[in-house]
Length: 77
Image (tube, rainbow, N blue to C red):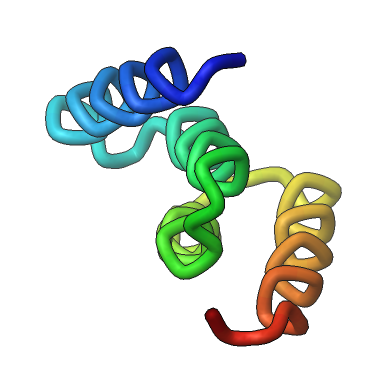
């Protein structure tokens, strides 16, 4: 996906979350878009916001925790 489309995806997902902060998949998709844009700190924030949501399925929480571990292991830019 091109940078322009990724930027559009970020803007759209931020709008979704402004309307529905509990939208779990929007947090995860936002993190993914930030990863593709080379913004690991923003991706970490999106994943952490997901983990703060009540009621997310445990298998998905486990996957997100794994992604966070990988992102936090990246060298600082």
